[in-house]
Image 1: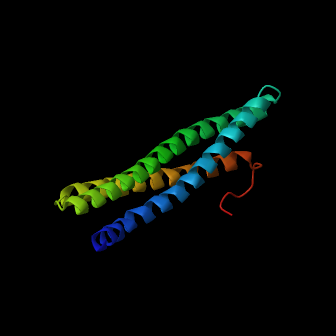
Image 2: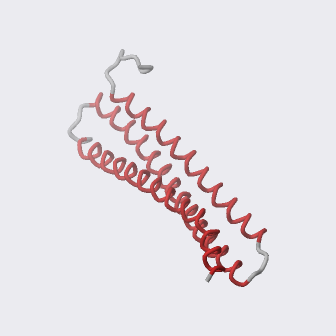
Image 3: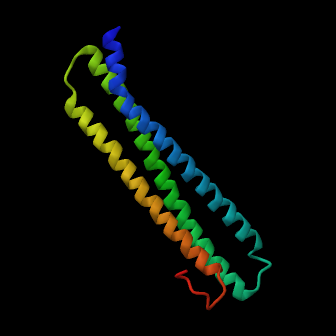
Length: 147
């Protein structure tokens, strides 16, 4: 029993990582849903809009399409990070249980997990910047965008 307790203590770190990535995934999927909803609303109003408004709406739709692709990639990378963290927990538990050295495998899986998380967060930042561009398209001309 003491061996199992120490093994479980060893696996706690990656489990906390899974929880944190889960919260990031919740945020990203909520943003993704808002992008989809906004795209549908703009597409529905496209036919009844004036020509001047139509070009602005098309520009916004292009930005939204890019944002959807970026968020999809960010969600996939964050999910990969969570999956690698789960593999890490299993690897830590299994190698401690059978008492074998898998430090290289553990280091590689952990590194891949964090690299995937970093890439996901960079894409998330890219989405935030793209959403600001779409907001600027909706602002009336002459409004200072630096405020």
